[in-house]
Length: 97
Image (cartoon, rainbow, N blue to C red; front, side, top):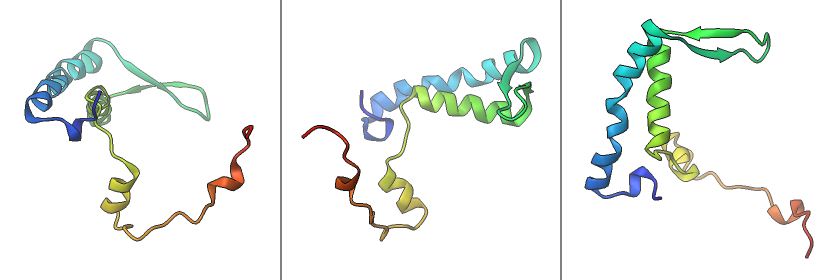
């Protein structure tokens, strides 16, 4: 399956359907049930509410839409166009030749 940015307009419209469920899921987790996240340091389950819950649900919807960015796009958005990898990957090859 192609990533979202490479799709034509019809397929993008179809994938945008995941955004329609966000308000309903937000209402469900805000008032009826709870969305828990476990803290790594204390191992305590914490309820996620409000704006953080909305952002989390939006990120999950984008994941379902296959909306992700390549490393080159991330570097370009942060102004790191001239960044070059100085690591020679042949040094780290541990497989059988």
